[in-house]
Image (tube, rainbow, N blue to C red; front, side, top):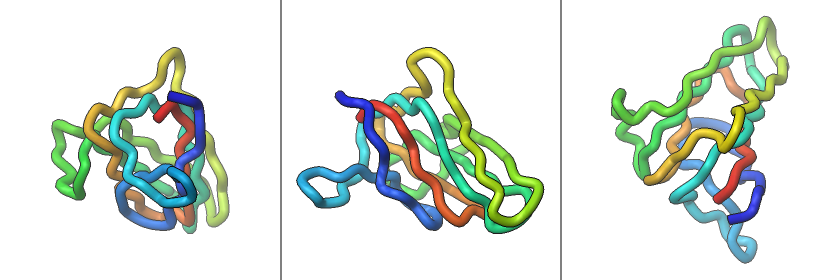
Length: 105
């Protein structure tokens, strides 16, 4: 796998990558960095190791909050080999304009 950027998300959804110009759900991945912009105070990102929108508590692999105001940007840098997702990545966002992930997938 190569280090690449996911397709930009503007709301809740399955995190995707481009394959020959077509958006495709990410399966296995190591998340190295998460970049987002808030729509208001207290932007919140939850990432689940899931291939659907179940949002099972035991599958939560990342939970971050950021932003003191509208349009605040933040990058969460994950150390070492990153956070591993074996089944896919579902993003649940609150007060977030957009989100993308840098990782190996």
